[in-house]
Image (cartoon, rainbow, N blue to C red; front, side, top):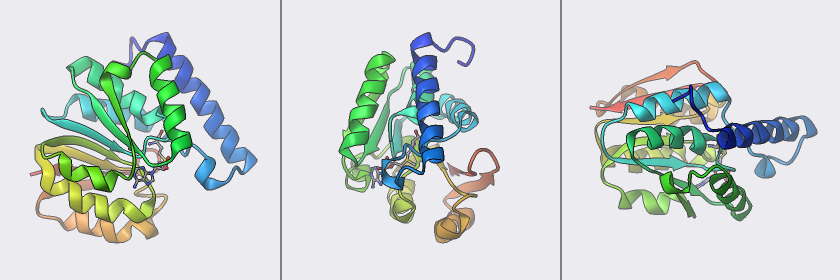
Length: 196
Ligand SMILES: C[S@@+](CC[C@H](N)C(=O)[O-])C[C@H]1O[C@@H](n2cnc3c(N)ncnc32)[C@H](O)[C@@H]1O
């Protein structure tokens, strides 16, 4: 997977990495920033997605599609697609551009809207990356877990850098008898849950 990433994907990843760094340095307002995962988290997502059982792959919080590309790399390998949700029109535009430029459109379905309205439509979720506003993590967790297949993997970003805000959801996941879960200290801290 990592040995043959096409040039078009590498180029778009580098472009978005630069843009994300610049946004942080310039102090661009929070809602306008890309707020992407770092590359090592992307690789972590690819590995987990490629190892997930059969089922629907979801992502909550597309931004410009950086993390989606990492998941799509795994989808390309295993013949699945990632359904990704983004609520902001401007981000949707950027993500569409990302998927077009990288020829990943066959492996990605981008849905504009609040992911919470759509999650109940998916009842065989085998992989999900949750990376939206921290206030919606709890709602998303409650909607996702019952709809996940056995062995399905849920990863939630910001488990360490937003620990205080996410504490109620993290405590719930770490004691939830429906999953095995732990926080992995990679990137901003990833909560990883496996449905029992
Ligand atoms: C941290 S950024 C995602 C970064 C992206 N995963 C990446 O690493 O490239 C969070 C994104 O989630 C979107 N978002 C927030 N709440 C949402 C919701 N309820 N449904 C869909 N998207 C949402 C925001 O507009 C924002 O673009």
